[in-house]
Image 1 (spheres, rainbow, N blue to C red):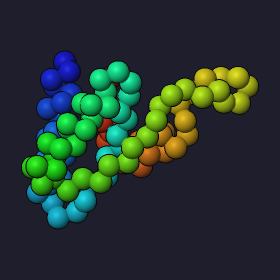
Image 2: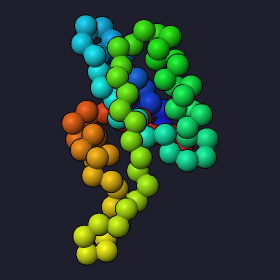
Image 3: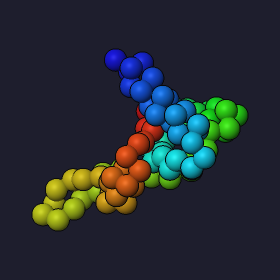
Length: 89
């Protein structure tokens, strides 16, 4: 299943590479090995000359109104705007 998600994402982004416009992608490095993987993926896209602008966001939960835990609003806004994201582990 994960391979299907990667295939779909790569297809979308590589399709964007065929267009002259810059594709903005929300990047959520995550914890553990996520930051290392994120850097490697960014290098791969750069080497392939895919026109991507990365918007790095943090998803560490914050306490919102009424004490509810939620992702930071700037991360949700970025995902809503870009419609595509890459999350590390």
